[in-house]
Image (cartoon, rainbow, N blue to C red; front, side, top):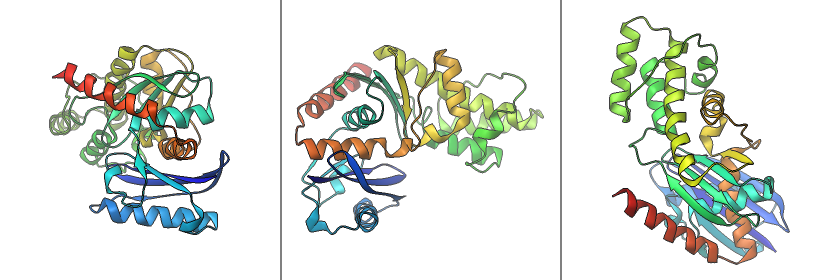
Length: 275
């Protein structure tokens, strides 16, 4: 069976097409303002790479904040369920998934079958997400692609207390004015995010193996800070940004969504507890 998973995040849209567990084609594109158009673009590109036409794909399922905008999908699944299924295909021994994207950071407890047992979400404004990193990179006047590497050359630890992007930028500017070296500020940014995400992970319980997925997993500075915060090794897939789309494609191929429904119930309960 040929199936596709579409992951429409706040910043990046991803698509993965699979057949019998094998990836035939995948693509990514910036989401932009129109999420429906982004879904069309990324799906068409994945089809092109796979050498397929739409009629060849038997089922399409979507996930992400823009999942409902994927009008050609037959269904949707929760982000947590997508990440759990995706990591299970890559690392079957993983029991804790930390998923950090542009809009949210979450930790997921995963069963041996790739089902969601529990999860928690970072709810501290943008702190703990890729959006926070981007805002701090702008304040530092450093390209987002370089801030992670920059933090690795830090020689001292500096505390950063802001839990909001606006206050975080002000804190960074103040540090710059006091002549604090940029590598040390960059490390403070990543340490702050890692601390918040680490706290979220401890809510569900840290059970080995642990994997880091999502677009922010490509930031080597954040990955380093997270490992130090957890005091544990963390597995990172070669393409961590595609894990959600891969898991969604796997769900589409399986046609079994019971655990995704449970994930949505858990999400509702977590938010209710936070309020």
